[in-house]
Length: 266
Image 1 (cartoon, helix red, strand yellow):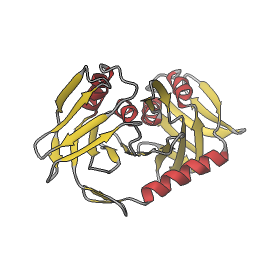
Image 2 (cartoon, helix red, strand yellow):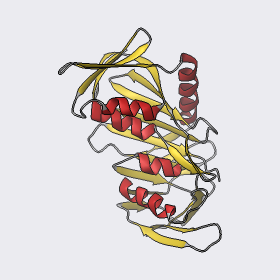
Image 3 (spheres, one colour):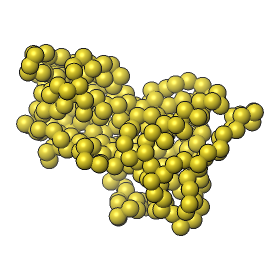
Image 4 (cartoon, helix red, strand yellow):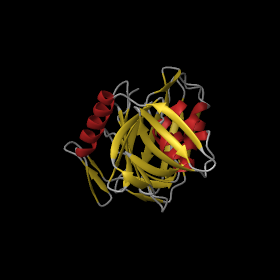
């Protein structure tokens, strides 16, 4: 396995997968491993919530130079992110495996960082779980379908507005974050309150476009705050009563796309 990638792009990919959520009063890192599959001229990333299998995600990045295909895993994404930061973000990195270590190498000025790999059984387990989950879904235009659900209501918005929702939620000082979303043909909004109902926040979220023929309402929690704070760019957010939330990061020419699905756990 061998490929070349800019340090900034690799850092962003790691950040997309490194998800922390507020759950039962604690900030909990629920995704710390990432499987990377180098194939078909692109980087494919797979990750899953390691505590409850309630959140699944996959990433695709096209702007890599593939020298040799292969699959490997990274563990402790927060630490790995620090290793990447030791390079200038404009650096081109050559990534390969040597002596059971993952090597990140810069040609000029020369620098080499070697880190341990995620064990093969865990790599296989994550890859299988995530691919099986997304294989249960299909996309038809702007509609996602599975055996149980059809997601045909969505809002397109900037990720910065999703991060603002998380920021507003922190004002409640709650033990966990609950996001009661409401999507109508005209607006996307949320209304929040803390456990003792002493603080309430209600707001309309700016959107680029909305597609729904009815009012959709659902509460989302576990992991959603972590997704909102990890991604950037333009987002398509699918919600529906009794349905998991789907968050699609749209490739706007930077070669990077991502897809998350999260089941609400309060």
